[in-house]
Length: 218
Image (cartoon, rainbow, N blue to C red; front, side, top):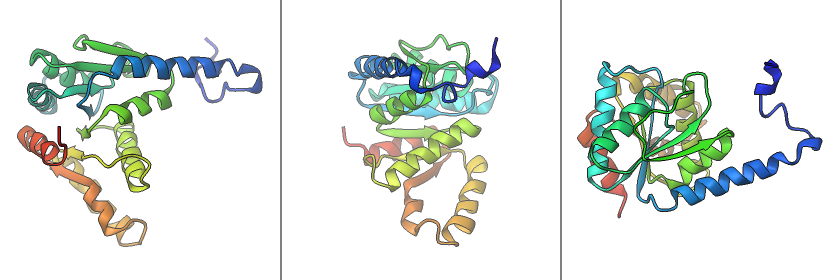
């Protein structure tokens, strides 16, 4: 395989404007597939979490609670935390959605979704997460999880999207990040004190549900 061909952005050229139709098709497919799932929460977290880890079980519990309250549960459709969320929602009889994309640690979709949409382009998939979510619930994760976190915060901060709850689950994991944000970003005038209100940190599944229901009116 030509390694260079895997880099989608690099492969754009003026001679390949036909790719716009593939992008349009992904938007259409996503909108048609997800238009009936309101209300929905999106759960993010590491693809590298195993079924025997505590965070896996906690994610299942969170997803189950939301499914029982008639929220659809949306994930990236892969393994790890995403699998746990889809499994929890599915086993609770809820709507379990996977927005899949081919990635090194997410090549095989998990089997616990009852709505699945496949994407080639990251930015289309990101729009679908944002468009159909009333809250982001973020479990411990890596670069991809942080990317989704900070993109949502940026769009809310700049008023490009309607504000919604952004909830970090696990104070042991996330408190260091929040301390750094206060020490460096806030103290150096890179954000305002109001921006800190965009993020909540909770630990227990029930607290996650309460935090969303306090803000989201169905």
